[in-house]
Structures are given as structure tokens and as C-alpha cells.
Image 1 (tube, protein in one colour):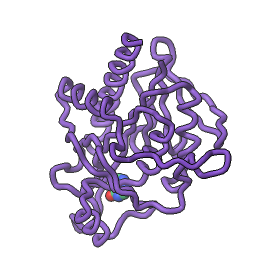
Image 2 (tube, helix red, strand yellow; image 1 turned 90 degrees about the vertical axis):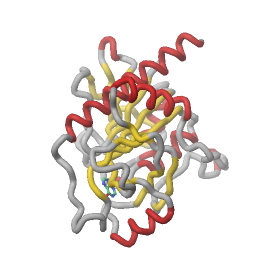
Image 3 (tube, protein in one colour; image 1 turned 60 degrees about the vertical axis):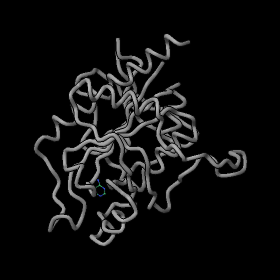
Length: 247
Ligand code: HPA
């Protein structure tokens, strides 16, 4: 059964695995994915901003991206999000297994259920991320000795600009732990298509107003990306093999 990793800023491919680019035509537009070769032929890597990181967060064709995974027969998806830290417990280079979100985006194509032939449907967001996949992520992180905060609320701002200090203070008061620009509508669309989807935020800076200027970490980021990809691959392998045993 195919499994997928979606990633954006700072993670553009899976260096340890040989992959080939493929264009997928979907009802919502064209998507370029990387498909694993040989023993990794069940692994799909989707660079959400395109293979050359040329599409900004507010212009990503999220519907085409999720539809491409559905069309490829994917059921389990892990997504990586570069984020700014609001919660002091999750410093830059920290990892958090997201469990909730606040949507501050606007003007994005945010649903597959937009009436007409696509029907009207109100998907329950009481549990935005797949609990089965989140549990597997946490267990595998512990096994790998990787510190993964077990829960955190992702605030999705529209971008591409960063936030003002007052916006970050507001997000903090609302219960936000980290801020990014891409989890919405990605996770909503995945849920609308019944994918088992979980997301991990990896912090690359303190959010605006916490320090005099926003500064992005460079050092340690490539090691962290490699560890996160290892965690994703092990977790996806585990859930996919359990699925095969069950069926
Ligand atoms: N704000 C929004 N998106 C981000 C940030 C941030 O501080 N850091 C990484 N993605």
C-alpha cells in the first residue's frame, strides 16, 4: 500500500532513497511527485511548494496535491511543517506532533465539498489528525530517542509575510503553540478525503516579538530534517505493515 510524505521548506527530497519525478494529472490540476524506486516503490514524496520550491504558501494548489495522493492509492500521510515557536517549551529545532489548529488563512481553495457535483458536506474537525498515526509517531520517536512534544496547536497564518508581534501575542492568548503557513487547508482536505494524516511541526525560529528580530536557525537544520524523515519512514513502514497483516 502506498504511503506518503509531504514536506515544504527545508525538506525538498529524501536523500537516502532513490526517487523519480512523476507528473500526476488530477481533476484539480497537475502535481509533481517523487516516487520511490526498487524496495521503496510504495513511498511517495510530495514537495508541497513544487520540486523547485517556487509556489508560495497562499498559492499552493492544496486540492491537487491531496487529490494526487488519493489517485495514487495512498492511505497514510505524514506531513512536515516548518514553524515559528510561540510556546517557550518548543524552542527552535524543537519538534511537535500537532493535535489541533487555528485557521487564520483567507482566499484559499479550502474544501473538496464546494457544492454542485461535489456536494455539501461538513467534515467533523473534533480530531483533526489521525490518532492511530499520531500514536505510532510518538512511539517511534521514543524508540529513536527523538524528543517530540506530544501535542501542540498550529496557527495557520496566510503569509507570505511573517506576523506582527501583536498578532503573535493574540495567537498565544488563543492557545497557539506554533505558527506556520501551510497546514491549512492541507490537513482539512486530507480529512475530507478520509486519509490517515498526521503532521509534525519543526521549529525554525522564535515567532515575531519574542526576540528583537525574527531569526531563522541554519545550524542543525539538515540533521533535524534527516532525523524527521527517518522518523516518518519508520512510522509509515510500521502502520503500512500492520495494515497488510490485518487485511
Ligand atoms: N511564521 C509563519 N510561518 C513560519 C514561521 C513564522 O514565524 N516560521 C516558519 N514558518
